[in-house]
Amino acid sequence: MRIGMGFDVHRLVTDRELWLCGVKLEHEKGLLGHSDADVAIHALCDAILGAACLRDIGFHFPDTDSRYKGIDSCKLLAEVMRLIREKGYELGNCDITICAERPKINPHIPDMQLRLAQCMGCDVSQVSIKATTTEKLGFTGREEGIAAYAVALLL
Image (tube, rainbow, N blue to C red; front, side):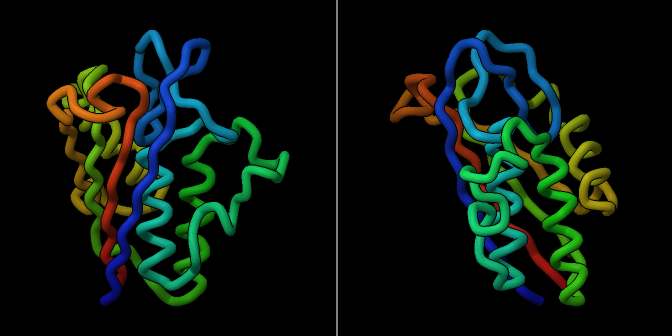
């Protein structure tokens, strides 16, 4: 068994779509980034890559590479899964925490779990997603950005 941890943050801006865990959420702001800026998937990719000792998402999908401009982060996650399977690993489970004041994440969690399970080729029971606020403290509390933490167990 191997354990990995990931963290990511993206700034909230106008004129961008908000994608979290592969699901588009209605919100007046979206996350800024080279790809679709899905902060939760990026943290998950880092957790999985870290567990397999395969560096991080920026190493495999640099923001200087035009192939990844605007890319659906589910495609990045699917590639991460291919990389770890190539090394003989399978996902045991993963656990993601999304830190945001708004929009409310909880109503979307079942759809998010299903989408991530589809992207990773695993069972929904292997994907845990939680949401929290930071009680209006810090950049997430001021709604300047969204942060996500993830851990992954590889077998």
